[in-house]
Amino acid sequence: MTTTIETPRIRPRDVIASEITKIITHPATLLAIALAFAANTLFGIVGASAVQFGTASGTQSLAEFPSVMFAPIYAFLVLPVYAAASEYQGGQLRMSLTATPDRNRLVICKLAALTLVVLPGALLTLIPARLILGFHDRLTVPELLTDIGRWTAVYLLMSLVAFGLATVLRSAIAPLSLLGALAVFVNAGFLPWPEGLRFLPDQAAMNMLGTPSSEVTVLPPAIGALAVGLWALIAIGGHAIALTRRDS
Image (cartoon, rainbow, N blue to C red; front, side):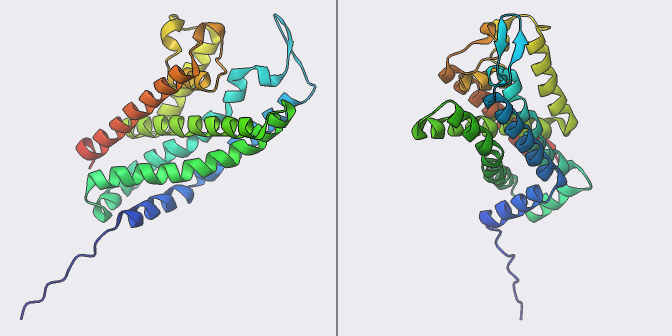
């Protein structure tokens, strides 16, 4: 008599739960959220205070320096890049593929897990600072919720960009270095062609928030949102191609 042993069906929610567990138990996740929370909250307190900083055109509060207020996102991006790059350490990718041989499903579940971690993580790091600044600027409740929503969307889109880059480059350091170096060079004026540079992910994201880094990188918020959204789609596509066609 022959008996057939059925292979247990792997449910998408089980894969997502497994991926979430991998992300939240990685030391880099706690570090990223803690650093971004501390920086955002500190900048929010200083930005809402009476402290002024001298510039060529007079004095300004810290909240009037868009690049500075945006900077904590680079600490937060440690989370998605290590979520992607850790798959290439210690044979983790082989284990993932053994557990979920359907690579298309694995791609979708990874992106779902990242989103489910990034959204609450971003809210945790952003809400105290945005509340401090919102109360200082006397925003209404709908305005405050819109502000938090836009910042959270930016954190999610930039996380998807960083996640895709980390998968394509198989590295955590390379995407952080690339995104950070571009930000420094653009803000320092080392790179020409500002008409094109304003479409880079970070510059587009700042325009999405309505806080362009300079006069020469201004875009309408809707165009900024579209640009950073396209970068996120390209990065997700790169992640999917790398995971389904290249990696083993």
